Image (cartoon, rainbow, N blue to C red):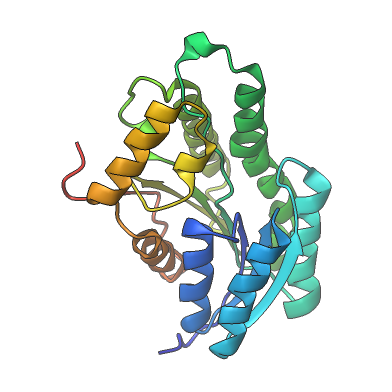
Length: 246
């Protein structure tokens, strides 16, 4: 079933997992989606499925750590569809391991993608939203920032930095033009485990995903709920996790 109002939604990290599921769900609902990710073949697969279902989709190979790439994604939405209503900042990486491992490269990568990537999205889309008189930032966070556990300290720190950023940004924009939503998923079936170097930790995360992880479509539905609220309603924070997750 298509929504009465068709939104233009740009999504980062849209080649797999939560980003891909969100793109496909929103396209089925009649929204137009502009997808960005680093792996072209994954983007092409998602776009092909959307097009086969009659959806409207555009893609761009981008790295959110580069501002010019994110700006190009925003400009593509405006050039192709005349506007951008929602930016879903979903791109993220997790290099799980003890802080004592001193994974300097992994720490820098998480900061660049998880924090700077969100800032790049705000910087690129805010002028468009202001010019239109409306716009919505949806950012995928994590329950790792709500319940602090070993081996996820730096990852959680980047997510909580974004959580702080979004609240300050919300308070700076209470004139009814810009809306912000932070969504914190728990254990979801994604490629998270593949970024873990430690074999025992990687096996542990894979086992947890197999035991009780929820599908990425569950998070996609939360995104759809948030962006289809009336203009005077802002869904600030959503936490979504498996019912059996501690």
